[in-house]
Image (cartoon, rainbow, N blue to C red):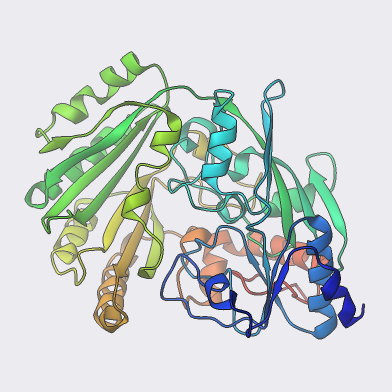
Amino acid sequence: MSLASIDSIRGAVLFPDHNDFDQARSVWNGMIDQRPAVIVRCLDEADVIQAVNYAREIGVGVAIRGGGHNAAGLAVADGALVIDLTMMRNVEVDPEKRTARAEGGATWGDFDRATQAHGLATTGGAISSTGVAGLTLGGGIGYLMRSYGLACDNLIAADVVTADGQLVTTSIDEQPELLWGLRGGGGNFGVVTSFTFQLHQVGEILGGMLIYPADRAGEVMRFYREFTHSAPDELSLFAGLMTSPDGMPIMGLVAVYNGPIDEGERVLKPLREFGPPIADQIGPMPYTAVQTMLDEAFPPGLQVYWRAHFLSGLPDEAIDMMIDRFVQVTSPLSIVLVEHLGGAVARVGRDDTAFDHRDAEYNLAIIGRWPDPAMAETGIAWTRELWTAMQPHARGVYVNYLGVGESTSRVREAYGEEKYRRLATLKRQYDPENLFRFNQNIAPVS
């Protein structure tokens, strides 16, 4: 392939001297300051194929940008060729088959608007600007997961441009091992240009937030623990320690009930009456409103240092540790988040997908955030200290929640040794030279 082939790409090709280059290399996490060799904004699969072939010819690795929300900022990398899919955002819905095909640059906002026009949805990210691609390829935690499984569990087919520039289709019947790897194995196997999902009927949702003062966080978290032990699959319930806009430390519970509103009112009544909360913002709303209700709280551009791991439970000592350490938080924008798993997530067979740790009860995310880089030293220290203190209760990690500068051993923790070896074998088949290495990387087995 000659250098002239890059000129035949229909989308934009941005080198560092281009006026739009700095904007194009920025991502959701403002801490990330990477300078790629070139950014290719693709318009279609043919552009993606040419970009992959060009990267291979000039000997640079490929980074892939979908929504650009990854906590570690993996959509861009120094010296890489970035394949930017943000111009490929079409979502096609087949209401009869209850399926949707989303291009690789679509966001969950794009996806939900298209599917909800037919009263349908699948598990997606809780921030509407999150990319369909990144969330799904890493697993896909979301409000519908206890009803319908993770985003990756609902992935039934995909089109992928592999490292040799070939466009392949994978499904349960066609190259099924590749589909297995895409269900949680990240962007290691190629550029996924389209995702086909199974959809489910989803109507009006009962959802919102309950807010408590921080001095009651211990009793609220213990009540949360007991309540989630018997929660129905229709209910997703997340707990968070945070600071209100007026500077008051608070404890928040985000509840989303996917079912009849009157039944949801009955299920949530004990939770809403406990305390009671200082604010009850729960009410019926469209699913698209549920999917955007946290958007303002997670704007782009902040410095973000993220550490996480699954939890096997919420013993008293873990609850007390989180609360005691949150009192020492160095930035009012930082959050400690606990996500309740179980339900349909736990019923998928452990070997059915690359995603692992399905029997974990909760997921813990410690999200250090601040607007000023000068705050980084204290913010990172606080985040790491709480994460380290919670290690006795850790059991593996969600690959999408791996943050800046985490080690290869942490990637292995996401999958366990057996699945990691299987993924490494798959990597050797589809990307033996590790062209797609700017990710939570799985090196091809030798």
